[in-house]
Length: 118
Image 1 (cartoon, rainbow, N blue to C red):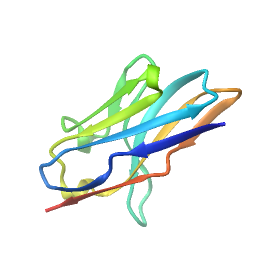
Image 2 (image 1 turned 45 degrees about the vertical axis):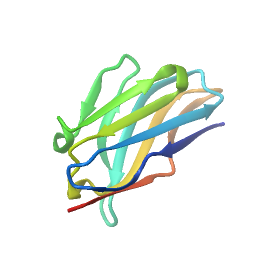
Image 3 (image 1 turned 180 degrees about the vertical axis):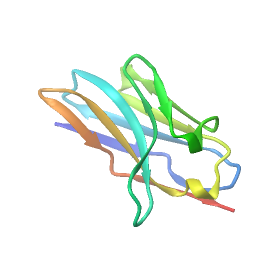
């Protein structure tokens, strides 16, 4: 069984920075795609950024140039560095990992609240 633990959310003023972390543990042979999503009440969950096993990354237009996704394969961890935060970045952020353990997995973290005040 694979589980994820997220950390790093909080309250920050506009223009500030936060760093989110998501670590996987359990029976893991390999992790392919790692990603961060966000969701506000009544809205669909949206992709913020993703990173493939080879390191290629993809970002939502709204966060390009401000957010950076990275991964530490040795630690089974994905990070999201968020700079120049805006009030519209406020949301619950979820990590998602796809990989292979005793079987394929596609799992979500518990979510961490990011609130940006104006």
